[in-house]
Length: 492
Image (cartoon, rainbow, N blue to C red; front, side, top):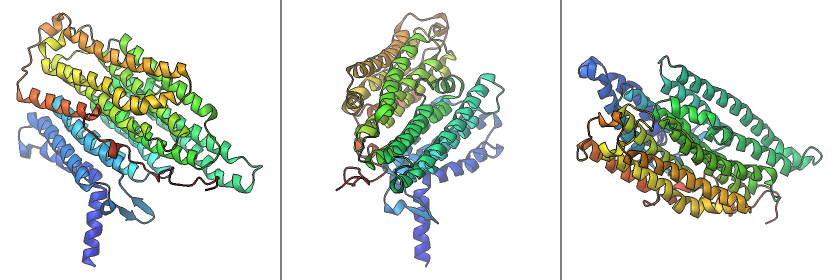
């Protein structure tokens, strides 16, 4: 009996390891910030260091625990079965956010570490139960909660508007997802009473509502205002978690649901839904890239780069409706999240060193802080290499599947404008130094902090650009392969 309990306890620890580290932070970070461990003036440094260690420990634990049978936990009728994509997001996300929190070193570094820990725990838990309404609700409610936590108690009207905009978006999307669940529950009725509704029409309705949830959450055009305001107002850790990482996990779940729906009927369910997704994805790519080129505020530029990344996710949703067994769409989410995280790392490094937000005032920044120039070069290379390796092997096929030369060309132009926006940031850094930049002390290239920053950046960009192969886990499906399963309404 004791052996059975021991195995169950080990399974629970393996299955819930990211959540356990997040809960542990509620005890550890306040404890190390207390007067028992040093001066009160250094409390934020100790809290940030503890958060970095917990993030790294959570990353390693997720990697070691894996997603095998030993990590499965059964709690009554609920099964928590960690997936390979979920554990990969936690493993990479823990390392990425540990580096960002360490570089930021602000007074709220400990709190930002907790935002990252709980965000990764929500992602892992949601991807461990990819069935029905529950995982989507977990991510939606978790996103709203984390945005409020990231905003803190600072009296900032801009942050308050960003949080309320996020709450409003989540409230609308929760209503839409309930409608999707009601439509899906009505699908079996069409088999017994054809006069009620056809299976294809109900399935198309579910696909439409799920697609609306996806577009609203990832910040695709015309739902981009929420995403831009998040990056403009919230701290970078909260912006990345709420605006990029949680939407990336949500896209994997919705891709899974769309694939199941499309493979469950014999007739195509695409129609206007697929056309709308293709057009939305293409317009979002172009809009995000062009807007990033036209804006001057660093936060807004980063927000529009994230909007452009959302365009590939919209194209992926269209492709997976047409081809349920397609793997390409599953390879879009993670590299895009890593690329935007690299830009976020550059932004927090620039803000810490110069305390400036305008690109005009930051003219010549790369001349005085060469390590940050390396960070942006890696981000720009990843921004270009991801379309070449992932988008053009997966995403380019996505655009090509639309059957429209105009949409294909528009997607390629969108990728080009996003790359041009990244290059523009670098060119600003190589230009003549502004007075504000010239007055700032010159950063040491060979300092330990700079070496750690550059090494971490190169590693992240290597994964994002596909030089370090993660496709085996990133393309892991959250459901049985549709190719190997027989659709419900078709003959074998």
